[in-house]
Length: 341
Image (cartoon, rainbow, N blue to C red; front, side, top):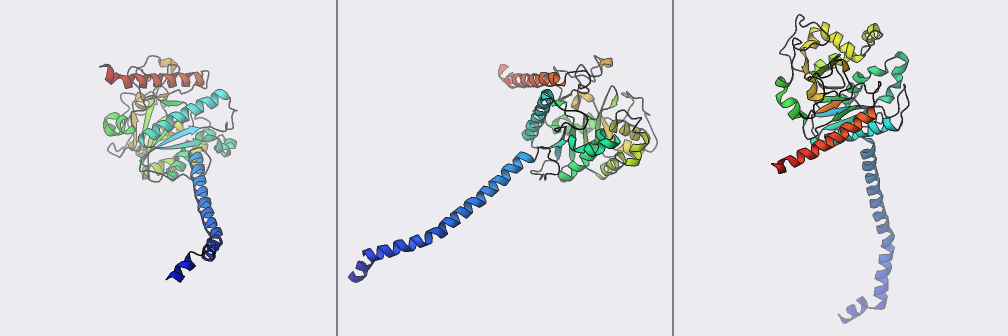
């Protein structure tokens, strides 16, 4: 026993054990370095995805995290498009609009699809650059296969009441918040009735009307077989080529034409009061100034403002900054209200 203890604690034994550890050290180092490299690559992949997933990069894969049935489609023109170059104010408007929608989507657990319209340059040769909404909607539906409702928003929109969800604003009382008859409000004097319309049909398209007719700056569309048929016909080249020179408002005029003549399209379409999702500032629809059905009302806390037409003789940047500051002030006032009672 003594001889064994002497051997274990002898200098020769200690030297032998140390040499064995030194021989195993490179293998352990390689294992540690390999683990760290794998971890670094995984972190790099996650970082790249977080940067580019909602950046508008064409064909970048987007995975529908979460179970939200709502997707906000924000139309931006990050590259300047075919028609014009963008200056500092245009970039500022875009940043503000994106931040507004992103904060809203994050707050309520919705998906946000930022769609860069400048990638649609392939349509410019046939004057179809402003018809790409239909194509973008179809693309977004493929990216989010589990979502049910898609809310299209133009760039020059601002969500003024971010605490209000789509469920509360629209869907919890969908039948009460929408209407199907044009008897009470028909700015284009479209046919009030056509044969074979099924008024009990499921609502698949929710559109506001403004002073000029249908407004596609803020509207809602449901994933359904009805919607697939609508998008196919809406985007059909034969249909487009027949009337594109007469239709000043492109897709909007095409939808109005189909609604006027096709009973099945009218059956699945409902209208929503404009101020529920698409209030106008004072500069829009100037010929109907003062119409309470159209214009943003601060005292009644309208949900969304759409600065439609601001690029034609108005100041988009000034209007966007005004409503951004106003929304922030309204939220502060709303936050303090319970403590002031």
